[in-house]
Every structure is written in structure tokens, then in C-alpha cells.
Length: 195
Image 1 (tube, rainbow, N blue to C red):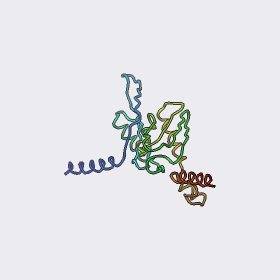
Image 2: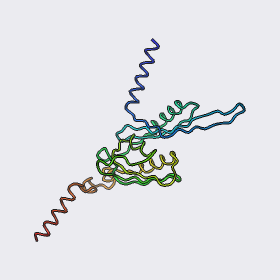
Image 3: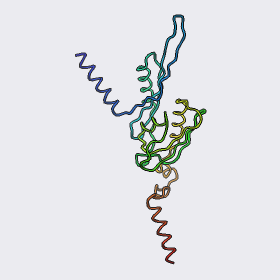
Image 4: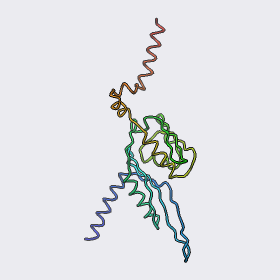
């Protein structure tokens, strides 16, 4: 009976994990020197996302790597934030974020670009569900500061719907139609030439 209960709880955990994407960003081994020698500990940094616009990061420390990763994953799940995406594949506008010595520049990209980002930023975009983005880290390569700078940038993201609601306008008034804009300009040019 006890075994069946354990299997059921494991299945529930497995179902929850399948919904979320978790990426290990870094593991740091630290040593404490004591009378008998050294005692090792591990610090893990993990990014968790649902691939549909929710993402979070967390850190955990333990004597074993698996325990540190579990603690970091639990911490990341507690601190997830929703980021608005354009067409479910890229960001609405370019972003700049800073935390300590870590600076990141994130730019939107056309279809087919892919994720052009390194290290911790790539993990964030993969967990977030972004498919096309170009990002650059300037300054520190410390993964903690890079992650915090990336999240600082993502926190400044505003969707056209939110801006329109704030200004009391329609979304169409704020965002010109990207496909229709070129056609409208061509129509204006042909009218001027005919006159």
C-alpha cells in the first residue's frame, strides 16, 4: 500500500515537471576547511519557465548537487513572472537592463532568427518560449548578475494593449500595422506620381 502511494505522488510530481521547462544555469562548488579536512557544498542557479510567457529564476545551496538543484527549482517556481510576447515568438520592443556590473541589451528579431544569446540569457529565453531574439551581455560574465539584469530588462516590457489602456486609446492608434504600413506608403507614392 505504501509503495502505491509513493508511485502516485511521483507521478504527480512528474506531471508538474513536464509542464515546466527547467534549465540549469550554473553550479558552484564551495569548500569549508575544518579540522578533519574540507567539507564541500554546492550552490545551484536554475531558470524555470512554461514556454508560454512565464519565467522565473532561483538559487539553492546544499551538501549534494541534486538537493541544491531541487531547492533552486522550488525557489524559481515561487518567483515566476509573466512577460507579454508578440505573436508568441518574440518581444514587443527592444530592452536594456542593468544589475550591478551586469548590463544586457535585448532586441526583437524577425521570424527565423532564432535565439542569439549566450549563457544565462539563452536559458531565460528558452524557458520563456521566445523563438526569435538577439541579446548581448556587456560587462560582467557572472551568471547571477546577468540573470538579474535580464529580468530587470524584461520587467520593463510593456505590451501595446497595456500602453493603449494607460493612454485611453485603441491598440491600432498606438501600433501601426506592420504589413499595411508599406502598402499605404506605396499607394501614396503612386498617387503623387499620377498627379
